Length: 84
Image 1 (cartoon, one colour):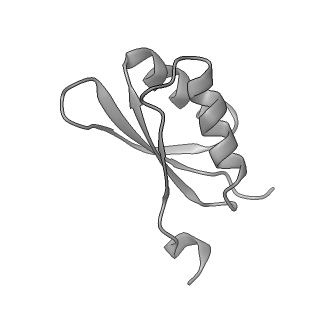
Image 2 (cartoon, helix red, strand yellow):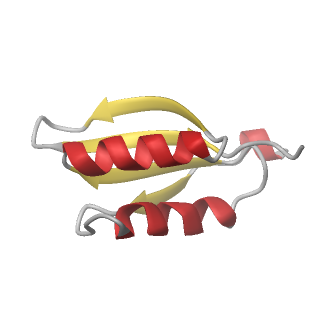
C-alpha cells in the first residue's frame, strides 16, 4: 500500500478551545508522512476558521469541509504538504 492509499488519521478536537485546536492539529500533521490525510472533527465557527487558515498558511491543503449534523460540528479533511 502506498501513502496515498493509507486511511486518514482521525482527530477529534471537539472538546478543545483555541489555540489548542490548532496545536493538536499541527501535532497530528507533523506525525503524518508527506501527502498523508488528516480528518479533524471540531466544534464551532471559530475553530473551523482558525484551523483552516493555519493549516493553509503552513502549506497544507484543505480538501473538504463537511458540516457533520447541523449541531456546529465540522469535519475538515487536510492533506499534508509534500516534501519540497
